[in-house]
Length: 159
Image (cartoon, rainbow, N blue to C red; front, side, top):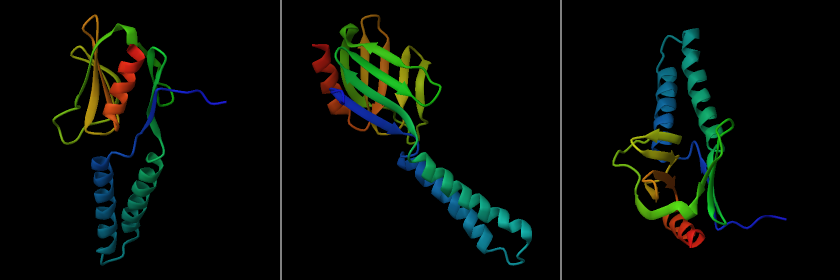
């Protein structure tokens, strides 16, 4: 029997449209270089193999879970990819919940449990994030595709 969660979301590693575009442009460059090789040198097949490899890796990354966000009872749980540790945040210690843009940059790298400048970041894709500030002043920045739903689930679980 399945458990009920106030909020559940899976962030996939390869579904950020900016990085999908970059990988497709690289593969397209490889295929064009292969096609334009007029001498048909055997080593030019390396461009075709590289382009096909980029496409294959891109397809595999579409199904790789970067991390999973769960809001259940009075805790928020973030479980990451393979060897990453499980992060549990006690929602009773959260003093402020905000929905803000994740970053002003156009390209953002996926991160999991990155401690930097008093903030702990979790991000795979999306433009917005939920910023949770606890009673000690530590800020958790959780990137999500559904920021309003996550914020309302956190507020409901907190209360």
